[in-house]
Length: 75
Image (tube, rainbow, N blue to C red):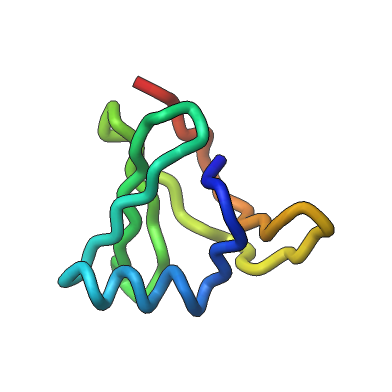
């Protein structure tokens, strides 16, 4: 979980600004790396696990959810 409302457009801008990778800090103090591979946004956890965003921008009252295809693990 990342604090704030980071929608797909903002995430793509962060990836572009970061030269192809955006580093996101989780609420537990860990890090996720976001990048684009084969036209899809993928996230990498601190253990090297990879997860693809399958559904982006599910807006809720407390933030934005991005559905992923694999569980990401903290360090």
